[in-house]
Amino acid sequence: MDDGPRQRGSQEPPTDPSKESSAVALKKEIGLISACGIIVGNIIGSGIFVSPKGVLENASSVGLALIIWITTGIITAIGALCYAELGVTIPKSGGDYSYVKDIFGGLAGFLRLWIALLVIYPTNQAVIALTFSNYVLQPLYPSCIAPESGLRLLAAVCLLLLTWVNCFSVRWATRVQDIFTAGKLLALGLIIVMGIVQICKGHFYWLEPSHAFEPFQEYDVGRIALAFLQGSFAYGGWNFLNYVTEELIDPHKNLPRAIFISIPLVTFVYVFANVAYVTAMSPNELLASNAVAVIFGEKLLGVMSWIMPISVALSTFGGVNGSLFTSSRLFFAGAREGHLPRLLAMIHVNRFTPIPALLFTCISTLLMLCTSDIYTLINYVGFINYLFYGVTVAGQIVLRIKQPDLHRPIKVSLVWPVIYLLFWAFLLIFSLYSEPMVCGIGLAIMLTGVPVYFAGVYWENKPKQFISFVAKMTRLGQKLCLVVYPAEDKRREDEDEENREDAEEKL
Image (tube, rainbow, N blue to C red; front, side, top):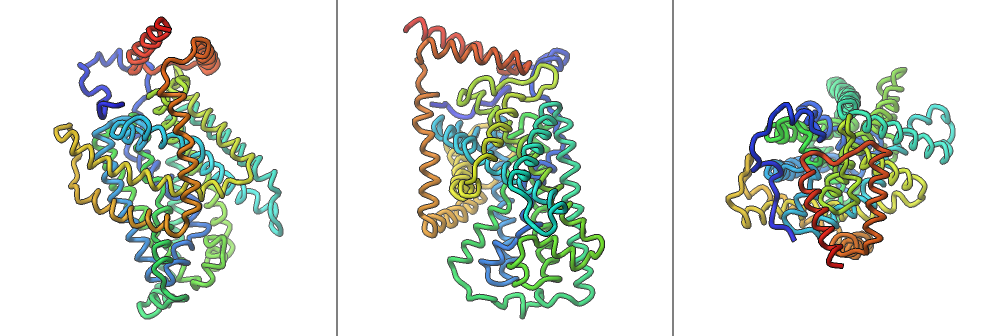
């Protein structure tokens, strides 16, 4: 269906800068610092503050848990390195969706988009927003659980506010991301410093080799594999910068630089935050707690312990902003490729933000807030999300074989994607073995996209009345949102319109 990766703009002659500056298009406003903020802010959510016990629980000892945190950080860096090559070789927003579509064809790309659209982003954003509202309302309900309706209402307010910010200005959205990422790093820095102080005081019992590898339950290969899986999930979000490639300033330099800065930084923070926790809490205390950072603060910060719940709230607020920003670009890219309604590929004539895609993201998340099965859905599709990481990295090897002479500003050794795929295959096979029902349901949810693809995308000769209705709705959406097609896509949209008119004449 596709002839291979399209290098958007790579073969076009130079344009007049004055004309380019006035064109309606996504603007390159994301610098290196904001790029790092997107990666770090999307990886570090509430988990490291609230419940970083998934790895420890299955690793069975502190020492092995720390090794797993380091190993999964290295594997994540390898995967990000592979994505860096793909990101500058196929310089299009949309991340792994764009890469899978261009390399493996429209159906494969659509299934990646479908599962993200249907479940992954709405559920993740809903859960992060609910965590934010839980920690904001906690001081008002110190002796009981906050009412469910209040939690969901505040989560909805959070989503609406951040959607407005993202619609108003890309610069505002990136500034919010920068500020809240800095805030969560300062909070984690405080935790790490307190851990160092504890070590200097001699509180490092669980870090001594003789005790660090002392199992609090018997070692089990299956549980250790699950610990690696939990560690890999904790680094989720490392690929989000690839969703906004077209808005990066000098992406050939800043994409790999942001990855090389952010992934080691997150790995350092994850490892040493866990080191700090075990200087004040035993493994059993860690496993029994559902708010590790809060208890850590109560033990070591005294009257300043209020910093920890505020830090969790700030971290989740920034997490919602980062997810809204990047997921809207994924849906924008999908609409531009004809896999979603064309309205979602339009941007505001003055603000240059993809307002329809942002509103679509917000509405789908608000609908998810109304359901009671959010966490169940996350379990079902977590496997699919991880599946496409491997498919994308495998695409890097396929692309090397199919188009060896394609210009690659960054070209990594094929050893790295092979290493990543071996680790990925190990975790994937283990997931299928340990939870076949959950993985099977996840695959079934993904495959519901196949008939949708053939009916909505592959079938071109749709009834004239349907085409006319969609065109009217698109024009209405344009008027309401004051949006148009980006200038760089106008020529292709005109060609598509001509093709549709030809098809109608044949009918």
